[in-house]
Length: 507
Image (cartoon, rainbow, N blue to C red; front, top):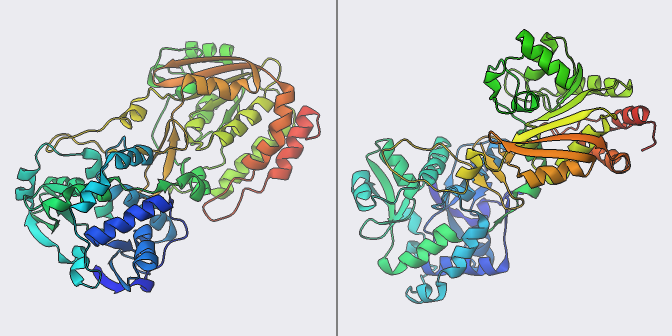
């Protein structure tokens, strides 16, 4: 529902991941003075702003407006509001999958805003026409498609689909000849769904260049990695429940380096013997996920100690009790001093959103290794097709469409975020040099290879001093991880005591 409401009837959210800066607020003020409200604010049923925080700020504090146009969504819980907040940060711009706040800022800097703004008169703030989004009109989708052939952006279409699923309606912005200035993805989605008409807000040809820059390029920096820090930690460990009867790449690359997982059946007698001869009979599965590997290896007589801090239940949500039970069982094995032949970190490091956290995982796993233990790590490579897709756009209407709604974040190379229409999930794609540096900090020997879209490391002989130096802070982090209900794991003391006993040191 779109309404003109008192400006104080809507409130900014406390978790908005965009950071405002004075220069871009100045540009946003220019946009409102010249163009008015082409697009409304978006807020939930309780008036919490989901999109348009900076426009609200400029309208209130700089322009002195008493009313703003707001599209109200249905009532949402906090997780949905956070997710759709990110979706809006992508869905209101005609972005491609490779667009980031950095390259959008660069494009905005190249746009001649001064010249474009001189072609447009200031609008009357007191006139109702200032709120242009209230004056849209329905237009035949077929007419708009004819005028915009060859302009399609599949990624923008995916973002439009996501917002539509949340029952968010957003008009398309066009010049008088029906050329889309903003909303090409919304038009593409409407055409594919055979929607007859779509709401259009018309702007003049003189306003087109300024509108394009303001509606598609003006973006505040994302601050997702600090505002949503804990949310990304536990959401990123959600794994699809797939029926799989084979070991993952991380568990076989030393015995079958060129084989896909499905091609190596560990339960055949010859493969079983080869696996145990190579990896041993006492192993750690660190980040065990659904325990697929744990159960498969136990079936062939391997003693597996699993650790999984975010164990999913049948509903697909984290089962905290089961997660803590697994962690306690793991720490009991650590405390016992049990010697491990191999330690596996398979795919876990794709799901750890921050490099400091990944280093803590590497430190803890190194502390599990004795003189003859080898650590085997495997994660998706920066050459993986999913990672590469984030550097490319895609176009085409009435063709097989991409389903990507992922985009890259700027806080570290190889970081993407997806699934943010429901539960934002970060993935890290590693280069061989990054993988080497991660493990070389704690191991004297590190061999890294990039194969089958995975980067793989074999590590031997720990640097004991380096491990002991960092281990306490690593344990304080890993065994007090956050859960969606706001609680923590709460096993720090037990973890420190277990590793002190194992290593014979005081941490």
